Amino acid sequence: MFDFELEGGSHTSVYYTEDRGLVFNPPVHEQRHCMVLRILEHDLFKGRIKKLVDFGCAQMQLVPLLKRVPWIENILEVDIDESLLRAHSYQGRPLLSDYLDRRKTNFRVDIYKGSISSSVNCLRDVEAVIGIEIIEHLYPDVLENVPYNVFGFIQPKLVVFTTPNSDYNVLFNLTLPNGFRHDDHKFEWSREQFRDWCYNICDRFPNYQVAFLGAGAQPEGIDDVGPVSQIGVFVRNDMRGLPLVEDISAEPIKLPESEEYELLYSYEFPKSVDQRTNREVLLDNVKYHIFRHMNMKNRFYNDEFDRYEIPLGNIFSFVNSMVYTPEELRDFLIKEGYRLDSDDRILVDEIYESQESDGSSDTSDKLQNRQADNTVGHDSDENWD
Image 1: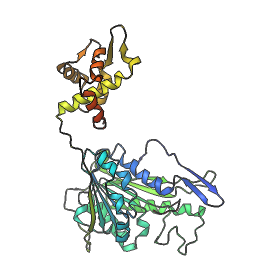
Image 2 (image 1 turned 60 degrees about the vertical axis):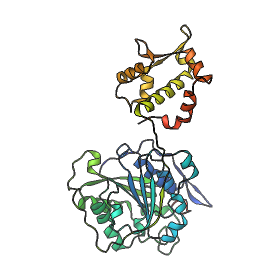
Image 3 (image 1 turned 180 degrees about the vertical axis):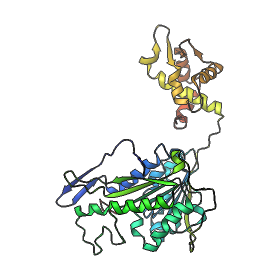
Image 4 (image 1 turned 90 degrees about the horizontal axis):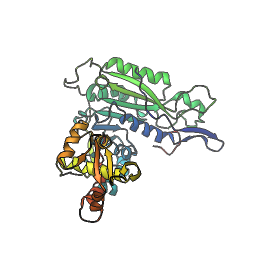
């Protein structure tokens, strides 16, 4: 086990009403999805995960969130229910907005009919495995194979499993014959049972350690029952700068009797192709951020000399992924005809602003058109399920 925290805290609430019982804001299924997104955006994984699989994806509600992660290039949506996948395949299609605001990297959504316990070739280079509220739906023989497929065959950098916390069930009025929250649940684990399952996985696959999070808080004044959904976050040792105990370069062992996946849909998203040279990109970025500073006239305008005086460091903070040092940026600006004083302030005359805005140059229009490209920088309808 290791410590793993998400920045920003939790802005959620839970309260009780006589007609609805416990009410979670936002609903717990949305909290789970947001938690997965925040985990993927954690500094440990930023820019390091390009391909992931979402097992038991059901209605594919996670896809619209995952599209926002710029370094993810391929999502595999996998479920055994073909009719459910076909009914909700629209979740994976590009929207009109995806054509208007195109991604700068490749992005594809592949929708497969298949099992979480099948070792198939399309999973071999998956770097993150997501399993939201799936393991409690599995029969014992399938569940037994899951760790071998995920941690032995796929061997991803990150694995996230969520499952109901049965300790919380004392707060629900459960009326299903099986005594669980859903009629298809085969079990619901307590916090202790889930932790034992996770620790057992780490014992068998020592390249991984696990941390625990939760979604859906308990009401105030209630004895400790934990979260509605418990979350296990498995991280491969090398992601945390630790040595690997076992060699992951060896040929992974496929589980016997694995059934091939059936590809139902594959959606390729539009991509923005930038034809500019590195110099042109840097120059456009510099111009754009200089104009932004010129709009803050009261801060950077010197009335005595009728000019703007913009600190070099201000511009460097926006383009430091393209130039390594302020000195390198200074040399670049001088070569491009900019003037700087001894205090490393970029000097822009008032006449420069007039020329750019009176139609004598198309630079301003180009910068506005490229504004988006020029920013450089590093389940169920139930409220509780």
